[in-house]
Length: 390
Ligand code: AOF
Ligand code: ZN
Image 1: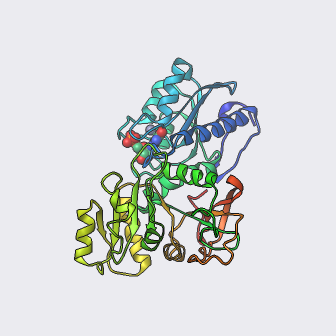
Image 2: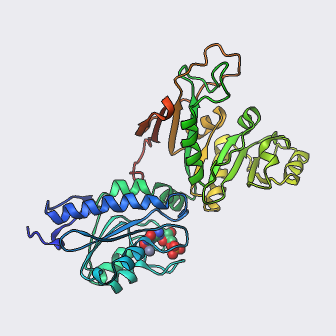
């Protein structure tokens, strides 16, 4: 097999294989790893667009330029990398984490920029499910005579863009369930301590997560028990929609959530069983009211997720409590879990102690120890298909 750049192929029908171990393939893999890494820099700013990274490499495999999609409405990764490469892009290889777009959105098509720059070869990790692209970007490049390979580090690229893919394909946001429990399995603060279960470091981790997501939800039980603010501190680059699942409309107007409703948006998801008076009070206090359709808890949850998806909210963090988690997990509506377990025990604390949720089976991605807690992060395992989840 010739060892020229164009002999390297990653796709063989629907199976992805590396057909050569040439140094160019190694360079392309290294460039794709770099592209996946820099793509993350747009996290919290590009949504509902995908995270995308691009690297231009020369014939000898060295990196000429790189770029990433930095913020919603801003230039695409390929355009940034090609602009940085300038004339050096002629005859070079573009390594990109997502199929280049071929449509006019807020930005011109990347396929046109690639052709104009004189790129000879494009290596793509994963296709773009967005209906205006969906294979047409690759087809346009091939039709123009560009050497195109796909599937390099595809699982990593699918994981990188999993929230975008879920929103595009199902109309629902990516759902992250997060809770903190004591060593002896209670969702309760340790006796005599401050009111927190997890360490200050863990709480900082949660605030960093809140700062990059689009919406955060709790049940009314948690809202009543904890009187939380549900803001990111420090705040992220975009407004965070706070959501309370409050079927009966129990949220007091004196709660911190309602008192801050004019500064930070608050959506109260009520059922038809909530009284007109209560709904009117909450609305007058500045809350947005969303009335769930009648149905099972799972059906209502699906309705809420579809409503958030309709607003193009890409990532939803659910912070409790047990009833909400049970509904999410039973209906298979959670995608990712962040479980903090503190080294402390609740013991015989007289405080009310809910049990933590029965954790669904996870594909564990990462275990860390912020401030001595154990944080387990993983993807909720899907019994049917793992397609699109990496
Ligand atoms: C790329 N490279 O870096 C990104 C792409 O409105 P626009 O013009 O920003 O287009 C958004 C769509 O383009 C988005 O839904 C996705 O399909 C694709 N995003 N494509 O070639 C990029 N961010
Ligand atoms: Zn593009």
